[in-house]
Amino acid sequence: MKSTSSAPANIALIKYWGKRDEALILPQHGSIAMNLDGLSTTTTVEFADHFSEDEVTFDGVALEGNKRDKVVRHLELIRAYGNVDSIKARVASTANFPMAAGLASSSSGFAALTLAAASALGLSLSERELSILARQGSGSASRSIPDGFTEWYRGTLTDGSDSYAETIQSEDDDFGLRLIVTISSSTEKKVTSRAGMSEAVATSPYYPAWLESVDGDLEEMRSAMLSKDFDRLGRVAEKNAVKMHCTAFTAQPPTIYWQASTMALIHWVLAKRELGEKVYFTIDGGPQVKVLCRAADAARLADELDVLPEVERTIVCKACAGARVTEDHLF
Ligand code: PMV
Image 1 (spheres, rainbow, N blue to C red):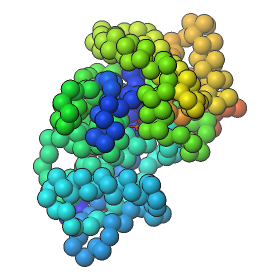
Image 2: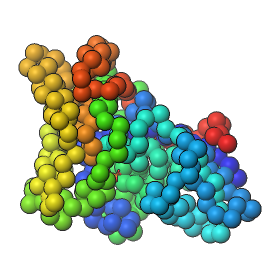
Image 3: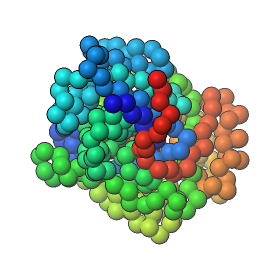
């Protein structure tokens, strides 16, 4: 009863920002994301009768407190799905990028955990069921199950059975889109996305305006992707990210994920664009700036970013497949 899965992190081009049901993790609105080949988490899960409690490690170090609790709660959910409430698990994970620094680590983490645990229990679940389960670990994880570019639907049902993600465009049809992740700070952020978005929903006077405009942004993004219009895609992704952060800035107390390095890189992108370069930015719940560009420019732009004092390192990513079972067990 052991299985391993690898799942990519995904970066939202139209952000998920706000829940309408905190327990089931049902979003206030839909979102669109890109699975990234450069950022992935691998997780091995084994269930056995002789384990006396769940053991959870990351890079060989036992997780404790809230981080362990979140994983154990997710295991409970999957055990309940498989009608095996009492059997304990051993879980080991590793990732090729820094955790909790605004690089969507929870998306790949909970997607990999969901698929590995479900497959270790021998559950044969549809992609939709896996996406719904992953969603309940971390909302954005719903989008790391299907391949390529994905849309997570808001849904309307109170049990969440219509709130899942599916592929809206294949990774093979990426029209030369690349995303350069710049890492300026590998330290963990102080306010989780979960806390940041619920403060914004509850206290930002701009949250209603955000909600009113998201459906229009989703429509524009779908149509930019269909027509393979890079500039349109970049413009709407950038505008949407800035609006999301405005609701965080104006929450009480304010959540400011940006650091001085974030601002410096935003201005770098804007200055490049004035020079005629095709570049746009997006930012999640953390300080890291992600630069959207075209494949032909990606290596050159990454080299330029790499020598900036604000940048520790860059990772050039393209769209990729979603979560997969592998044979490369971690134990
Ligand atoms: O899934 P969470 O709880 O890590 O929230 C993700 C929130 C953002 O990364 C800011 C936006 C998104 O859609 O991924």
